[in-house]
Image 1 (cartoon, helix red, strand yellow):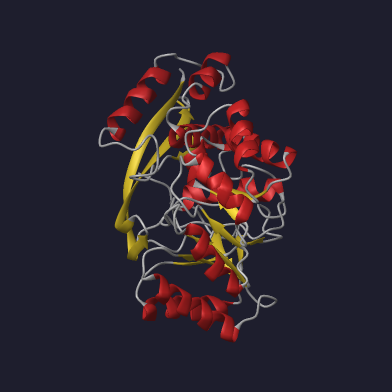
Image 2: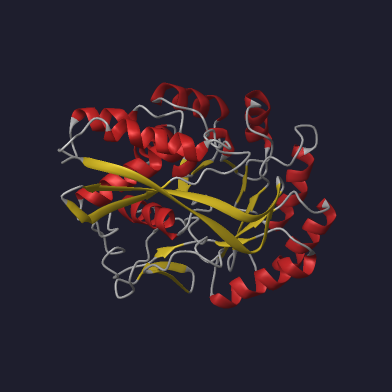
Length: 358
């Protein structure tokens, strides 16, 4: 009897309207892949493929049918060996569907390493060490953003990431001024994420105004795909620029090198769900390091299943910068898991059980 992949889904419900410059989200449709051998159904590897509308190349209304079709195609191979070339080649050929690549890859690793959601043996996965993360501040009115900022600072976060570009710009400057009145750059690192909200014509001036508040970095100031404009902005910006959406849909080491060599950002931000999984993420890191560009990992609104895979990967890579892994508390109905936030760190508490899709 062969190995089989089976898809599952769950609609995740946000605890609040999650706003970016692209709009607000109340729910997020998550999908999952389970792999097991038909003779050992209790040994299950799990991965998550939760494409984001308006952002993920593989998002479409037909995504559930696509996922089922690909599982049917794989299952028809009737493979016994989890590392058979046909199986590995099948999933690695799915570059057009980056979230599915991420899910299949992480489900495989989970299955091959004991089906315990421990993808890599590290001090993190053995509950001996946490991963430092940034506190994520969502867009909203001034009162909502102040409340989030105060809460994160009270928790002990020394790095905050603020979504900007959705409010009036003067209001956003006011919020940054308030933060700096109570926390110096030495006490608190500020990262900003514009999600492409600025125009190439006003971005430089906005960056100059933002620079007054000692900003660590600004993610994706202008929309992706404007390579020449982004290159010029990286050259003149008083704030280090991090590419995020710019990386989506760029496949192959040569194409990745060409993009980064042309734009020359100070940072790249890698979201495995959006860039095609762990192998592709490692490729981005290797290319970036060859060009002297730093990086960190970020989740992309996954449930705790996908978040855990990215956290395990981050622990294996060992980047000391704060990672963007604080999204596990966003949902009313997330899966129970060993993941927990202690102060400004994400920990894996192996005493806590996993809840899995049904």
